[in-house]
Image (cartoon, rainbow, N blue to C red; front, top):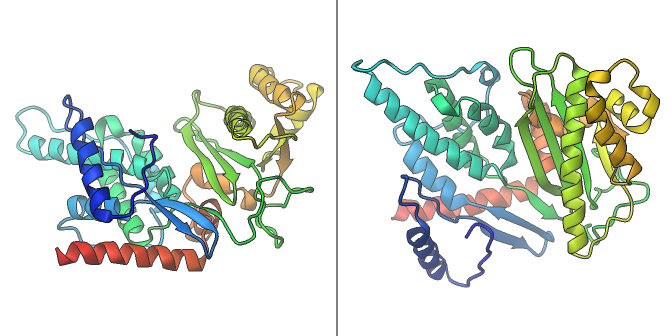
Length: 360
């Protein structure tokens, strides 16, 4: 069900098919109900395509935000997100226990929905993954952050766009166009990766794979082991990025877009680039030798080419930690291939959905 696309000419037919699928595929073992709600929007004037779910956002607003004071936050979250902890469930017999468990149940449903939504509304990806660390025992604060993120998406329903008026080929430029440069966008396949060292928890890996101007692969995940210094976290992130690069290159190969040159991979880590390109660079950092060998093999096999960029131009940084609004907005717009015109069109489409629900 999840990997099929259906194009219809009538909204009534669409609603009938969606409801039929929901009933046919509902899981009888849990209370989970998943409705396929992505709409394909093709803008022939702008030469873009996007997949968005304004209907799902409006339904989520009416379910999870009922009775809440509605905000229109510019940022998807706040700095205190980084300080959330697991919940503290009242013991058996405590009068607050039923309400606390009900809060956790609703929060788990909202978290699951946000994980699904953030596939294309990538600005909420870090929030959902960070709160997902406490999914086994959600706290009231965690649920509040999820609701806050949902309010942001309802007010700013900007999904990833691919293409543009200048997008005429998916081949890499020679030389490759640098991210955030004044020249035209790069439409071919390239990646960015970053890592954030955490002294109190496992470090984070952030990866962005770009094609046709928008992100086709977004990774925000905890690293497997707790690292003691930044170099190790960057090497681990680079190895994870390489596995995603190989997959993307193979997929494009099957689609008859052969990748005849190494995939440019941008990072702000000079040390990980150094060890990826030089056998003798490892020196005393022998504890990461196995992970470095992965990077060396990737370079030797022509799979990827690590390239240094300034930290402020590394969009994958948005998936590793909280960023202030200006930095977060800049990276999110880059990843989603957003412009002011595309934002206005997305808001107009969302307004039509809201008006339809308000009418009844």
